[in-house]
Length: 294
Image (tube, rainbow, N blue to C red; front, side):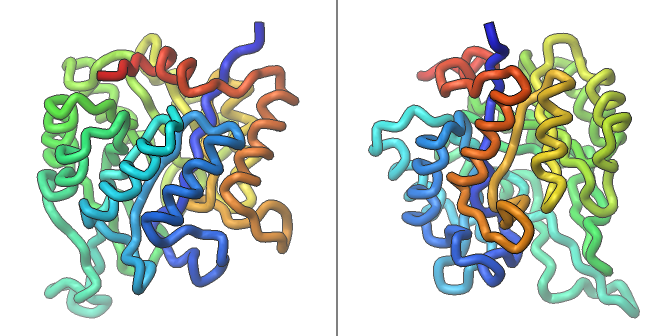
């Protein structure tokens, strides 16, 4: 029997991709429609950010999240909903004096990052397990060990499964420690974000080493950005992991050809089957992840 492989579609993110592609959904209605199209194409999980409809900038507005979640829920789809909890970590330093911070800084504490999670209680939410330089000159993503621990405790209290976001090896060590201490309920779900500046690279040796650091019975997925999306997906499948694709990470289907979320999921389905697996449906994904409907 072919191994069921979970495909996640990361729909929109919070970067400036709407300026580069008309297919990146911005409004809650468009995000929900893309979620349903991705599910129809074969995604078992949809990973959701929201944006300000007028400006397309990333948002933490709970009302926007509620609208997306309700539209998906009333559609009759059983796709698994994964909401980001990563917004609010952006620290931008003044390039000369560092202090005061640049006015575009969006940095809040653990509790504020989880307002929409505690209100809506999705199946899954992301938990970024450390700080890192994200490749922009004066910007740092901030997620201190204290923040990570507080967020893990609050996510557990809300009955939501955390997706442990790993951008480098120190993040993985912290996440494994939280799991060992019982703050993360098994089976733990880890996601390796590879090839991003300046985090862990996307080579096979790195992925294999990360996989070998995981707790017993952990579930994991690796993803790459841009042209690395499908190569990293293939490596993840071959090493026993799952798959993430979507316009948050990559806006092209092939060189110069813009993609839709549904098309990227279709390509992931084809890849999974080519490598001997079978795309997991939402019920299978729930079983793999230990998710149970209320």
